[in-house]
Image (cartoon, rainbow, N blue to C red; front, side, top):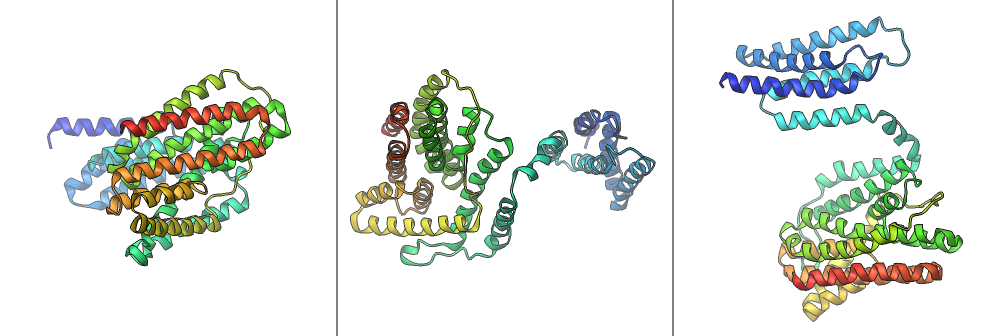
Length: 411
């Protein structure tokens, strides 16, 4: 390694320390700020260098003890109540470790972790609000989800069972984790930020959590208070636009090759629907937003419910494909889309990767399921919502659907 490489690594380490130190500098009671964190990160790199040259990992460990001991000593005389020093000391230890990572050529990892640490330190108030926003039931559900994802999932057999070899316990569990995790992200964000942040944010987070539930709840609110019609219309349309983003994410993760053929459909629907939504949002809305009541998607009942639904849809699609050919796949997709779009979309994507259906059939099945799901939500709006909301939602849904169909035709 030449001296230029040495300098680059030390400069990178300096940047990592400055980034974290910049946030700590904002706190008057902190015993370590911009310069201290920069020096700590540089110390990590320097001690890693010395450890490598001397072939002794104890040098790196000794440096950590020195840095930690100095900070603990500085805070041991601290009598204030605003900052007992725990967070700053831990941040300093992490900075030392990141400096060592830079020397061992893990620059990208070190930079990514530095950004994450800075975010954790900066958004202290928001993170403290998480525990207050999530209920005990939410936390229990999250714990159950963690057990499912990190304990049960790794021990599930990755082997095909049942008719057509359509049931793979590990694959089913992995998809449950993927869908539940995506939905929980929207659910948790909605609980944390609240529902007073405007139609766009409510629609975005509500769409991540559950588009069907969002459509149902805001249709009901618009019927109870006619003045909420503009807000309800925007929220419903935005939440359903999120479907295209959600499908794109699932496709990229599950079947990247099929995702390429799915992009025109998703892009066409999103652009057409977004244009109408942009016009709708220009009307604006004032006043408080009603509460959006959603079920935590990581509850075991919801997770296992999706697993059962996915298994049934997968078996049904394989059976209909064998008996009725391609037409059977599309009929099954339409019927499944009337109940749950995620299950049929995931099933189609998985079948396209295994070769059970072609990529074209998978994309068409998702298109059919999307149209069926749109029909379901239009029915919800018509039955539950007031007359004033029917026309704008119908036009918005039709614009998105026509855009999706146009994209599908050219794909």
